[in-house]
Amino acid sequence: MHILWLKTELLHPLDKGGRIRTYHMLRELTREHRVTYLTLDDGCSSADAIAAAEEYCSSLLRVPFRTSRKGSPGFYWDLVRNLASPLP
Image 1: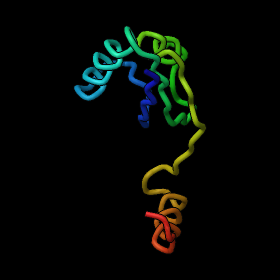
Image 2 (image 1 turned 60 degrees about the vertical axis):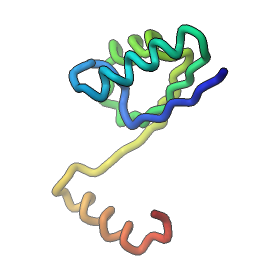
Image 3 (image 1 turned 45 degrees about the vertical axis):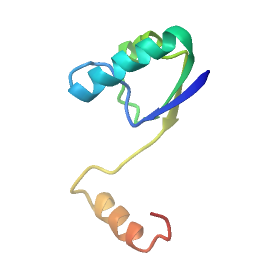
Image 4 (image 1 turned 90 degrees about the horizontal axis):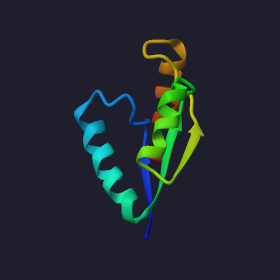
């Protein structure tokens, strides 16, 4: 089976309960299935975190993504734009 797993961040470092749980689930799934891990990439991930992804997936796809810093003018501009958006 080929599984596509979507998440907003890489799993390493394993410092939160949700990351640890997901890591162990994916590691088990990868033993018998092909797992593609699709994540948003803000450019802040360490090379170690990217290299460690092979522990829990067959292939890693990173989508470039930028967000404005909370409290910045860009952040508030994004909020105002989203109010007028037809998308959820």
